Length: 197
Image (tube, rainbow, N blue to C red; front, top):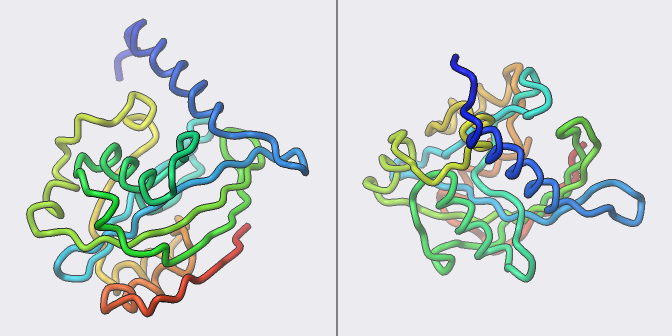
């Protein structure tokens, strides 16, 4: 692999700094942020997941749904739609998102520090064309940082999702395999709340 060009190195450093600005110390001193995430389904009921790793530790990997930190004053629904577009290249209106269906409060290690993230999850049902575009590999909206830390994006059937969750690389949220089939068939209006460490 060739060394990054000076502009790419500058962009990467700036993007790390921008990411760090999203995290603010909570009352307990632990860095925290709010986030919006999308559980996307294709027409067959498969779930879209990304495989990523920590920029500070390439061995720290996990599967997760598209989404990320909210901008100041941004609603979780709008932030989830924006992040979905940035990470997949597929633009969806925030009004297409169903929910929130899940509130996840997570504590984890990221970039060498303990972090706390409060996430709201929304559902979206993609058309066949949108589903194909999401994994086409032609997304030009990824930042240099995202290009570095996002290793894969793929659709997973309920059986594949359960097998993945039983494997060595964690799937977040951990309850996703049990909820996904229910959500694809129709959301019952209940927003579940989970705490994960």
